[in-house]
Length: 163
Image 1: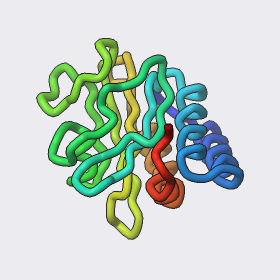
Image 2: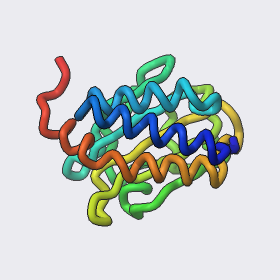
Image 3: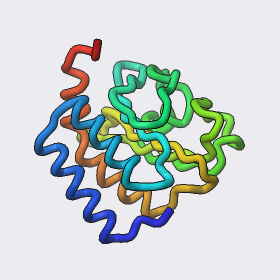
């Protein structure tokens, strides 16, 4: 999907507004909701926090929950994004042996690390039911959003887990 520069600018302003009024999991949940509602190819959006040698799902927005609420860093595309501290884009998850199947409908995925001082503290994970749904403009947008999220991820990790 191509995110036009005006749409990307508006999205970044909206994320900054969310982060100005909310913190921790509430902020992350609202960012997930906003991204899914704003971009048609984003069918599931989640934010994971690095928690030792695992990723812990802190917030998501999608039609259904994922069974992958904790993912070992050594596993899957999400783990690779953290291990490599680099964005991972897979045009067809069915051709990727690293893909951890969450939803039968998922066809492509982008995972963007959230870095603090160059070290991964979390990641944004976006699934789409379209093949090759993510292009360079999606990558740039999600990387710019990820750059704004370290404080919210840290705050989510400091808070007690939701009941």
